[in-house]
Amino acid sequence: MMEDLVLREQRGRVGIIQLNSPKTMNALSPSIIEAVMNALEAYDRDDSVGAIVLTGHARAFSVGADVKQFKSITAEEIRRQDPIGKWDRMHAIRKPMIAAVSGYALGGGCEIALACDLIIASATAVFGQPEVNLGIMPGAGATQRLPHLVGAGIAMEMILNDRRLSADEALQYGLANHVFSVEDYLERAIDLAQSIAEKAPRAVQDAKRLIRAAQDLPLTEGLKYEREHFYGLFSGPDATEGVAAFLEKRAPEWQEY
Image 1 (cartoon, rainbow, N blue to C red):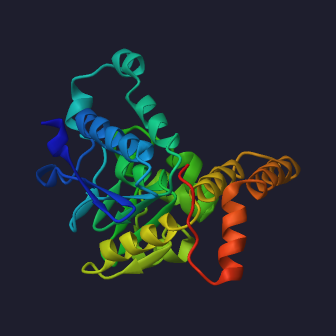
Image 2 (image 1 turned 90 degrees about the vertical axis):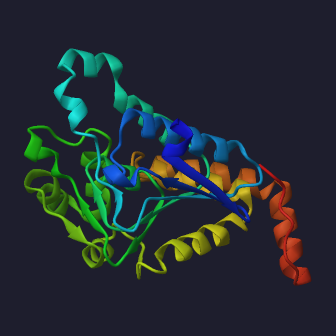
């Protein structure tokens, strides 16, 4: 039954994961979170996959946590069970992840999109963090990631006063990379993922790691970290192949990573 909570499909070198609980608008129950993490890790281990697209349905990417579960769990139990700790598995995914978002991306639904590396939105997408209305706050990354993307002021409004961003606002403030029609957004996300997946796997994954590290490292330390990876890649087989392919005007043949 857990497998039915997500649908998986592979197109070329792109692994596609679709949250599949339309009756609950893809509310993030513990079971669906476990299923998503398992699917992400499976694609991360699969050498035939170079990039991953995570999506929902046209009406809702995900409306966030299943609030009903909060009524039957105590503060001591939720701390002991540490359900948010499962999200660390998502942070460990090496391959680029693209969130294809249509409709509502609220609470944990917004946070799971924020945990991806790129966001492609449909024109109907709505991003929000409404936890304050329940007397709680975001717990899966919004207070840390939103300020880096949209600035502290907009993040404050979203988290403190349930301000919701339309697709166009998300694009304006840097939360979304592109906005397309409801009919096209998923295919465009897959196209972007396929383009990335055709690049040298190790270079892509190292670059992703460095970009994420830039949020935490001082500039001087980050530049040293970047330089180490640059030299490491330059001495590898993909750099040799990439230069040769460019000079010979042919498509490169990358090694798996």
